[in-house]
Image (cartoon, rainbow, N blue to C red; front, side, top):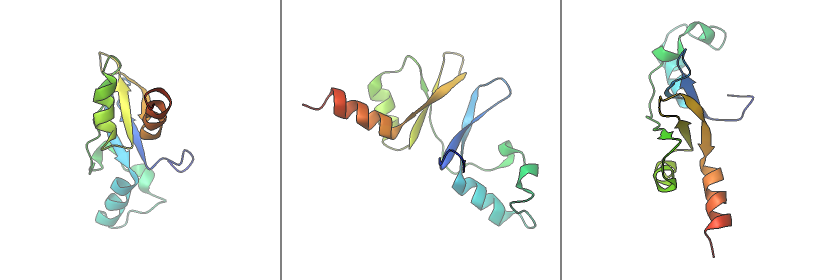
Length: 106
């Protein structure tokens, strides 16, 4: 997260399926709630055991732009999955705004 400068990242299962999103806040709450846990031992905690405070919805690759826009209003990014829920990537809110500015504003 530090290297990418993202404050939240998608979590994938072993098959590449979108599982959820982990935020910096989730990590901080876990640190606060777990006595003895620190930055040096955080790698020992399975990601799936960390409570997620936000439910970040994903969209199918075939979704309408309006569906994605509705999600982006409440999320910094929208995960995109295929028909089998395999994670394909993310679309950032910034990218959506730039797209609308270039293609729809007039």
